[in-house]
Length: 108
Image (cartoon, rainbow, N blue to C red; front, side, top):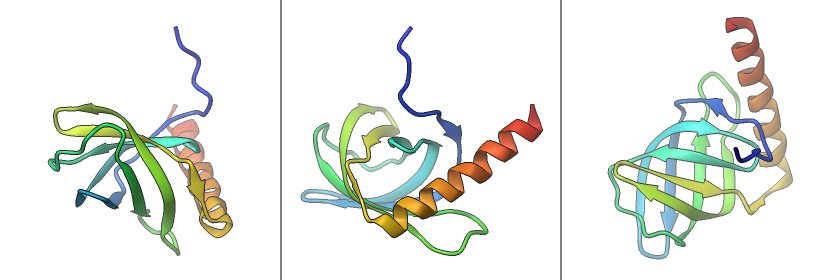
């Protein structure tokens, strides 16, 4: 079994994305420090480079991902890897993942 580099957390935050050939929105299926799975009806080519804006619920500040290539696609969803994130957004992502980890730990 493949060992993941970062722990993934179930999440349903709203996400908007834009690339050279596509633009749209969706909901996160899961999120980690290194990437995300996104549920969306927008057809996205594998290898497309996207910018993402994640809107976490009940948290101040958007999480902006400057560069995220699409690594896999399935009907109704796709996965991205986070390549470049500004330091402020990186900090917000860390804080948000910590709240998701607390929630999943308390639910277990």
